[in-house]
Image 1 (cartoon, rainbow, N blue to C red):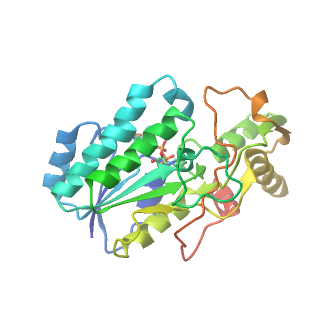
Image 2 (cartoon, rainbow, N blue to C red):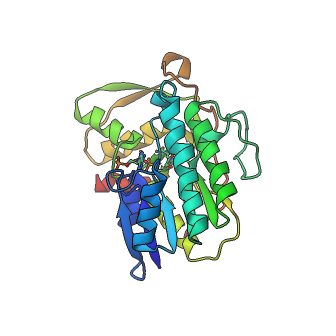
Length: 276
Ligand SMILES: NC(=O)c1ccc[n+]([C@@H]2O[C@H](COP(=O)([O-])OP(=O)(O)OC[C@H]3O[C@@H](n4cnc5c(N)ncnc54)[C@H](OP(=O)(O)O)[C@@H]3O)[C@@H](O)[C@H]2O)c1
């Protein structure tokens, strides 16, 4: 299968590249090779490489910054996705695009199903929801996978931030205990995408998260408990309410997704921590 991977520098893109099946031929692009806000660049890339499938992991992901940068967030997360979807439809290409738990408002008390109604609290969430709708409307072979709380050995993420702070000598950290979600290893999501692409298209909207349900505080506590057992740097973690941690944007209090994809083998947090 010829695959165009857009967003190859993202955490998820790099995890996909680590797991490319032998029978795939992958062309991967960063924002320098292909800016998704430019439809002409997308058409040229498709004409040149003739992919059968596009995986888009590129996005404007700076949740807090988006509040003061709405036009750019929508340009990348909505217009950029519309550009990709239209190009896929014209060239009969299957599209897998990634979205977020932040399309929900977090008022649920049980995992969100794909049939639940989104109601994003943030510009980021609204721009990602717009991207979902545009992909589904403009490409008949598109599939959206929503995911949550990504971490990996790559890029910027919560796990790497916790380890950096411990390595810098911080002894104690306040971490919010009233936002509940499912930390998800980007390598497991990469595997879910690969397995999905071995199946014909059925559901157009899917959820994939790892199965643990916890607060950011509990996640930090698990990371440091493991590191303490390994004799590595760690911090004491103190639970605090979100009201004590001022951010430009309100995040959902509960954004657990009911997964609709099961993968054969899942890597654990501890395996990822061992690799860092
Ligand atoms: N991180 C999370 O916790 C989380 C949670 C839920 C859902 N998601 C979704 O999962 C997907 C992957 O997230 P991630 O954390 O792996 O992403 P990431 O590491 O933040 O990377 C995003 C990538 O998007 C690329 N990009 C930005 N603007 C672009 C443009 N105009 N044209 C082309 N590329 C552009 C950047 O490319 P360059 O580096 O080449 O500039 C960057 O590498 C995204 O759709 C995100 O919304 C993430």
